[in-house]
Length: 343
Image (cartoon, rainbow, N blue to C red; front, side, top):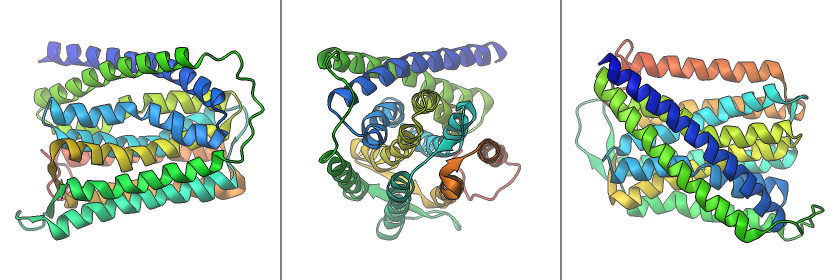
């Protein structure tokens, strides 16, 4: 057992390295394409870079559902990644930045508010599954079937988000020189980077499943911690690099845009592939509540003087550690604040 644990730990580390390299290529190609197509910084971060860096989360849901029949693991990775993104990535970017991480009103009042709407819509979609497609369960457990029709609700909202971002590009005039950028080359690098990331995600998903089997713990636990952190590496890499380059708006927009994509696209795509899936609302509601609290905390910090200072960054990291402690105690049966956590 010890050797197996060491083996799969090594696989997880290698997978993380693969994701890191793929993310590096992704960051360069996304920046080049955004410059070539003359996109505003906030659109670059919230849409182009965010979708690219969220590819691991999308791949996790697809691979977990199709290859391993572990939709719960995919959803756990998405929610865990969203919480990691909202607490750890801004904190890391704030700590490596020479100056306090700055935000602006567009970021706080447009991106942040749309993100809160995204969280609310996903919770409502889960609620509809429990209300209109209920499934019998033991007392205290609320289950519902989320079908393809319900999965279209968050996808339609994401279509509206793309429309809003498109409007921001209409009157924008770029001052960056794009004459030396070869778009075909950048698209080629982008495609290769996505393939590399796909390989890393599959190794990480397999590691999570094996950890659960070897230790007799739910794959849910490893999905919401190890896989979530691993698949968030592209988001972290991009945001930290942008912060170091003195581009805090793109750095923060990437975090919000990535989470919007994760919640409104990744989970529904998994449902579209599976045809229908059972949603344990008794588990989903507390986790979405934790995500909402983390979101409100970040936005409160961002709105205070429109900066995120180092003390606030440290506070975000502390909150994430508390979340991991809570999940660990739940999964190992020390506490029981969430009914019927997946086992």
